[in-house]
Image 1 (spheres, helix red, strand yellow):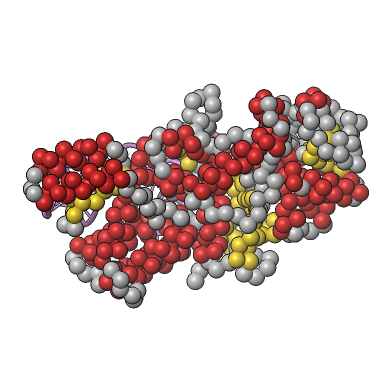
Image 2 (cartoon, chains in turn orange, brown):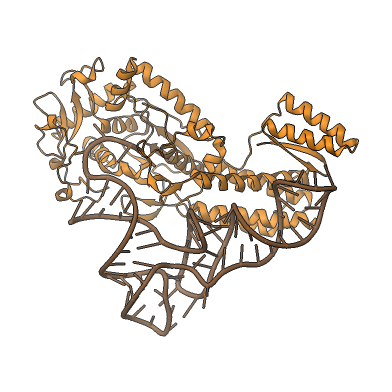
Length: 466
RNA sequence: GGCGCGGUAGCCAAGUGGUAAGGCGAGGGUCUGCAAAAUCCUUAUACAUCGGUUCGAUCCCGAUCCGCGCCUCCA
């Protein structure tokens, strides 16, 4: 069995994955800010994290994954006020939507989904430690900042030189009293825009800064040091850089060993934005008639470190490719019958080796899918030639099932045939038995109007959705 | 300005110092009452440009052009 290698943003190279605790992979994956329905770009990150998680399990590791839910920040506060709801009521709605959405995409549940607002005491305690150790200072307005000048390693993840940090155009005017413009807030003093969103702290009423939640919650669930931290490339700086500074300054121990970041998703070659009209939530895409499985395939099929250009044309291609997978799966099931699995045919064994070697190389999904599709072609050819005995077919079935524990996209969810469609199918079967082709064709049209395709096979009609 | 990623056939997308996977599309055959689907085969003088290193570069080095990302709260 080959080793799993990952690209570590910290070193910018491929490194063999070796967990701190043998056999146990511990991950912290940046999750959603729950102020709206998540868009397909967000889901690209979550699907990538899911693939990573599943591959670790495939390799035999036990996995403990933490995914945070950011339920207090500028956007959640702003939009909850606009909606006339309390912060908790407002974010609850989108937390629920998030869990519905990841289910649709067949994303496995993480072990922990801590919400920021449930961990305020941990954050306050962490800030206190930083202040006690001299890494944090309180500004005149009651906010607490992390001083990057007291943390020489600042910039090691983003590979930013401190002199390269120019004063950002987005620095708020009310942050004038920071010692260094690049210092970031650990605790934000209450502001009237915050309304009733505030917690008591040793520094007065206020709310936590953005980065501190991840440091506090990762420590709570994974301890001071863990294996993998992931997120989108846009989180490298400042979010992850700040997390490292806070965490390592507080604990004196290394934070995450490996940092994996996925590239952005583009839509029609451009960054998704509401003003461009190319902004899609998962729900928008489903509304257009695509399935979660098709979207998952589309998000999965491009290597995570390459930017992914999402188009509806490529979603159509995903649909066609999956149909081919389904057809093969069905043929295989037919050929296997109830036979017990035996030896894999040579072509399947080679494909299995290629698949694993590809995934082991930093989740090279394209090469892995190439192995899959080569196997499908070989398998179909063998079936055509009646050269695949039932036990071998069963073995190939098992191989696909094994691959699917990692991909989560090969198994087609069963769809029940609605009663009205079934009634038409029954009438059509009767017409066919009577060789009343005109009636048969008319019924096929009616069934199509209900959204189902009918095809005639040697074993009778088969209806499939759309 | 700083840091970083990418430019491979009609589209998407792997990969390699010795002329290049796979998917979609397209063409042909098979199957079929018809159809659709499926399947098999085929498909393309594809590696941004210009130099350099080398027996040999798409793959290494340099430059150039083009696209994209980050540089304080966007996955």
